Length: 470
Image 1 (cartoon, one colour):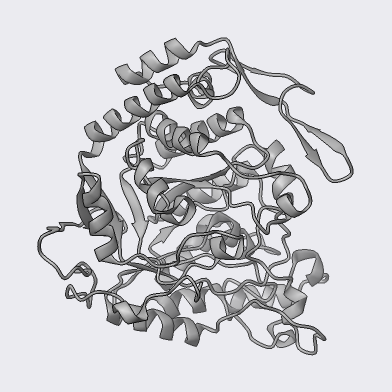
Image 2 (cartoon, one colour):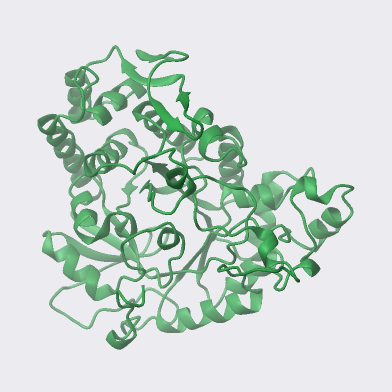
């Protein structure tokens, strides 16, 4: 590897896995750089290398654990960079999560959102706690949310075996000589059919709402069994109403980690190929990292490098980077003893900070209140983050994995939280092109950027979820 970054087969981080085996990685957090050189480059705005990122994420590979004084220096440099790049605004969006189905056969070990697809089949003698929505149901959900004032719908779903891109794709899947080999089952086998991806995107494209959907993994599912390119898939989805692509399913963009936590998913190269294809047909992008499981700081640094390089190739199509701290409770990785927990708060803060410092071509870094909670989320806004997610009228994925925090955030909550740290609350559009500064002294607080938003609060106080409801 360049820039003084070292690898070594059989060395480095080891994690216990079922059967008392040991997991060894080629990429390990060892460099010939120094922390002092790395932090000096970060402060001076010099483009960082992978080795620099490793030094900052570890607060120096010359010391064990995280050094608190060095950590604060990294956080201060990142917060200063944030102020230089985006100023004192903290942005958020009025959005809805409409995940179509939990049916999935991929078997990722970090996920507890999925339900085995066969449990949704007609005649299954058992119980499933999951769901599948028809396109008509999705349309009703989104229409109601748009009437309330939201203007973005985010949809990330399980890889239901009955899903096809469109009817032409379904014909090809039905004609395949071995449909099970390509994870296809006819929709007639299920109690509820999800329809096609085109059906669902069209259904959610209501009254000018922004549709943020179809991860690279879902795009791979939408081309399986054919020789269609990712560009063909995304061009078809764009015509149906898709606006931007969430860069989830990235997890860690290093294949030796993916081989452990999600061996059934597309590899790093294919994820990057799909993202480039989406940008090539004119779709906007976001990017994520899901950290705090079996990976080490070297993997996190390599992931950042691959996102930064991708941003160069797609000419700035990535609007934001979203670090997602692994929620371990009730996931197979935890239940099988592969991991004993998730990332520490120190690691969370450093991940946000180094993302800001390393990704010098991505303007916005998001703090996830779903992952960090209110207190932790606000802290991340002082470590380099400038965006605070969205209202999320429904959030199933983190909750099903054991997440402790809520599933809705009102505009009033946002104004209070952001003002409490002396920053400026700003409503924004998905692409950050439209912004509205909110005056904390001028309630009531509700969205105004949506097609039917008039400043009315999204949810009345009596409608809000309570801890008992959660």
